[in-house]
Image 1 (spheres, rainbow, N blue to C red):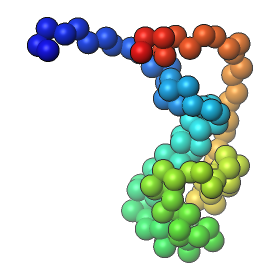
Image 2: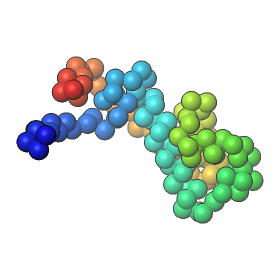
Image 3: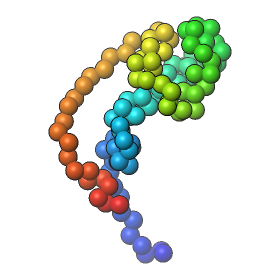
Image 4: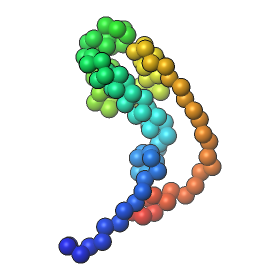
Length: 107
């Protein structure tokens, strides 16, 4: 065990793609939006109830976002929440041709 070699694999930057999850790019996008929402809440030391009072979005939705339970959220809803928190959302799109998933080949 002491002399086993550990294989290091560099990820693509999208853990969902690296794990061959369905709709990986959308899941990554939603995770980034959720992280930005959490960053705003934390930066303002805002509770989910305070966020609800400010935005009209249910406190339970903010709790779901904090817990990374994003299944009920669409990307546009997450962008709307960020907007209601006073943030401006800009999205850049880069389209690439699909390639073989070299990250999974190492496993």
